[in-house]
Length: 438
Image 1 (spheres, rainbow, N blue to C red):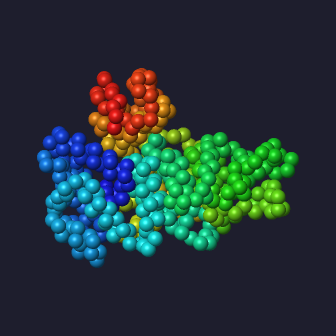
Image 2: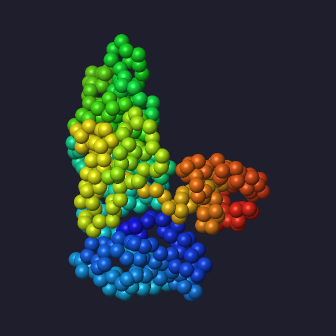
Image 3: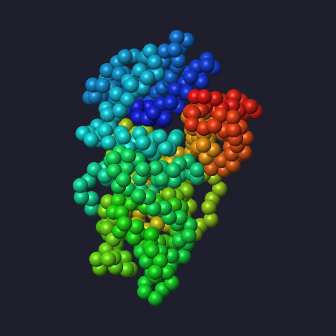
């Protein structure tokens, strides 16, 4: 855990944190994270960070052991000089204090760090339990969209276990960027690479030659002609034929490629320099990862994402470079050519979710299911979310049918009695679920 994540949770993250702190306080215990990585300049570099709500409703933040800060940032120096136990009259006062440290933790994002934090906050609301991955993606996005005349597109590989938010984060990027930039600029084009298992399937990207089957079919990459700001999402990279990867070599390096057919102006050039290319894979790209891309049978067990993405004490850009290079080496060990592996802008590891993170995703799934029934469920009791989160499910996706079976009678009963349009909370017990006004 990185202390910086507490300073940039976003509204949804802080709401979940408060709920967890209150639940623990009601049980007579604190809510603690150990070990927690502290900003550069802190001694020790790691400590336990805990939260507590006392009987008077005040919120306490504590560090064990106490911290000495010798760094240059005045805000961090003032914060850690207050002692190892800090008391706040309300949770809002606590979060206001933490948010005030956010820009101090990301000096390389100044002076436009507000956009960086806005992108990161928007992504954190959509993807739970992946603070390090969201931070890395937000920084890469901020760097790319800040360029006036980019030479090549942004290209990222999301790797890690199945069902931890890789595709969810990819789907969130276009709408989050559009909100942050206050313009409907980006569009999403989704492609499943598990249908690109033959060498000739590479033609479906740029177009088949004249006389070949599929010549008249619109290629995937020609979407850039309609929108130069396209987010291309390629799911399951490990299922694609190696020839498919070679198509991306000039695109990722030069930002251009030649289409098989001319456009209305007679040009065959496709310009991707302002695009974003996202690839997902369940392949283990940690230093121990050995599974080959493309044709090897999947191994049992989840992939372990690269550790240390946000646990270093150096600047964020330097930490991301170190993580990228380690994953690139793993990518070459998996069978990808070195000249291809070196062309990706970043390789982002996703962690397996702990039980708290899985429960937060369950609460989000419940809210989404409620919307299908016309219900606005804004709160889910943490105890209910924990109880409805399977311990041994293959992934959180596989638990959705179970949630639907349990909650459909509750949702239908509430809709029949009171209709929709009100904010609701799901509470009660697993045996007797209740929908009440929030």
